[in-house]
Amino acid sequence: MRLQKLSLALWMVAIVLLGALITMSTKSMAADSGQEGSFSEITVDKGDSAPDFTLENLLGEKISIKDFRGSLVVVAFAFSKQTAKDIEKYRARIFSDFKDKGVNCIKLVHINKPIFITKNFILKKMKREFEGEEPLKYLCIDWGGSLCLDEKYGIKSKDSPTLIIIGREGRILYGLQGFYSEDSLNKIEQELSTILKVGENAYLGESAAVSKKIYHIGVTRIMYHPSFIWTDRGFKTALKDAGYVEGENVIFNFQDAKADPDKIIPIANKFMNEKVDLIHTMSIMTSQVIVEVVKDIPIVYSMVMNPIEEKVIATMGPSGTNVTGVATSLCALEDRWQIEAQLDMYTKFMPKAKRWGTIYNSGRVNSTFYMKELRKVSKRMGLELVEAPITKADEVRKAAESLVGKVDAIYGTPDDLAMSAFEKIAEVCNKNKIPLFGGEVECVQRGAVAAYNQDYFLIGYKAGEKAVRILNGENPGDIPSDLTKKYYLVVSLENAETQGITIPEELRKKVDKIL
Image 1: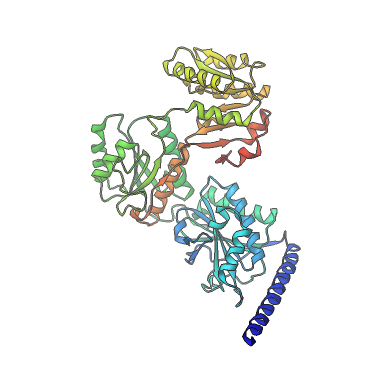
Image 2: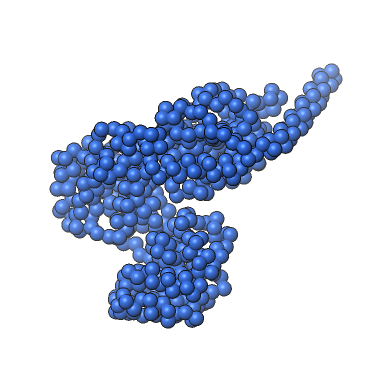
């Protein structure tokens, strides 16, 4: 009986203490809210290696700084439960605004666990407060500050959140302390934009060619194809963003097999004889042969569908060899515009639009093939297809003008003539408030509201990020391969406004890239 009374008394004390803690937490949050809007830059050891750590996120996965080598990462520190919510605001906005630029964000929360509350209780409460996989995936708890990360990172004040930017090579670049506000967010994003624009070495005040070494990179493809052009651009852009600039500290040795398989081995031998520092292979066949022949030079493959089946790698995880890369869901030389998938996506932008116009070359076999499919899909979807055939590039503008007043929107089919003068179509659509949708993602840069297809530039950029990690000293065999999505939805808010369309909120959530 005495034991029962003692147990009951202890529980009553625990409940009172818990209530007091909750009250203190609420008061603290109220006090914190009055400080929002103020922030300050903090003194950090710029250029020094960021202290590494390993912590579990709220999904039970282990996260380390070294996992993010090759990417910019913002490490956000919070020292109370309420400031944990504050750094989630930072993370959500940074992810949204830098979604396609390789910027990551880790949240580290320092929690002193009361004796009478279990870790599981706190974890369950945190999971309820941060709904969704992303907030949980990037939130780690440093119980009691056991890792002394505040000391290691030189954080002297724990009164407000602290954000530290760490570069692709694991160097500390910038520090800011302050509660979430548009001003503090704009400042951290301004620094991120500057780093992405000028490169980390220039940002730190160092020469872009800080190393005297000039890197030689071999690049090869099986043949000419527009997708390889965009992949190559993405690859070089990723290197440039990391400070590896063509003509300054990088020389690209480009070799085209020109659709001749017999040329691939001589290309491989050429790369080996010239002792290039890294090889970027585009397409299945070149990757297969290069990987088979070259064993002592790091290889980054891209534009390869089913790399395991094609024997380019044995696993999508770390290969343990000299090979890593980016696999695609579609083969660039065999994939074609998925008319039904694209039109189904575009009608979600304009559910009430029933008249869809298109421009195509009536004398080209490829165009007439797509038109047959487009007619079938349009009929099945209950849409009226208004066609504007052309035979020459200088007829594109007139064809677009002929659709004015007859259509609710225009869908650009995969036609060489129409694509060659896509800007002409966009000019007519801008002037007459007709929403324009394209097939290739680059159509958005050329005037379309949206496009839904493979993003070859992004494939190349991801491959370039892996190359950066290798040039920075990582072993290619330790870097897992990536698999890209089948389709990416790219939109332009500016083009949408110009052409008189408001993008539905539910679609904005599905967008992969906003231009």
